[in-house]
Length: 293
Ligand SMILES: Cc1cc2nc3c(=O)[nH]c(=O)nc-3n(C[C@H](O)[C@H](O)[C@H](O)COP(=O)(O)O)c2cc1C
Image (cartoon, rainbow, N blue to C red; front, top):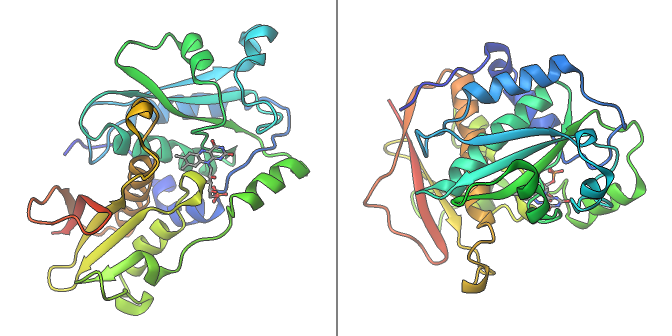
């Protein structure tokens, strides 16, 4: 496993960053400081690995003011996102576990920007991919599954952004026992199952997901204390949309990021493994397990 450097204070306060993070779609129209830009750039230079890949992710931070009004008008975020100057662009190279890797590393950055007091919003659908691709000179085997505006949240979010969050039911989450199971898919896990492991699961429960679908399910094995991560397969994915991101797999990467940072903050020792013997169940596909030491 590749060792990553995570600033101690960010890790120690991860629960607060996870709880504070919510999609921000209205920004204050002021630029983020060069100090914040430096911290973000530095963070993602170092933290570009995940349990899914030892190859680094590629991200770019762009300032809209560097582009002409014509280009800015074509980026397609207008109307959904207001007052943002800076965008983080997630660039995915085709490989095994590419979506999960992107999900993990991008969310790590989103949480770090929350830690720095900045607002952000994952955007997977509401932007014009081809225009962003031109701006950053995308290579042939690369795609842009997601971008995020990053900036200072507006004091008074626009009515439009409140409506979007309400329509996506952004503040709602499925209950603990709808998402997590004990030993079999027939037995829902109760929040009091373990004092130590409640928190990492609760942090998964609060994770963001595309259209707030929350497609992750975790099977906890009480004998070994292993946590097996599964994801609902994407029903909408068709052959025609082969280059459209597989959002549930990105969401799974986000969930693994929340679990991983939380167990690290609690100093719980364990590792991520791909176990062969775990069967898929109905529409749930097995991805990865956390195994304690
Ligand atoms: C992979 C991914 C893609 C998303 N795409 C969009 C998008 O295109 N437009 C948008 O307004 N929100 C988008 N969101 C934000 C979700 O709607 C939001 O995270 C979810 O409703 C939960 O709300 P919260 O982030 O405020 O907790 C996306 C989130 C994720 C994780």
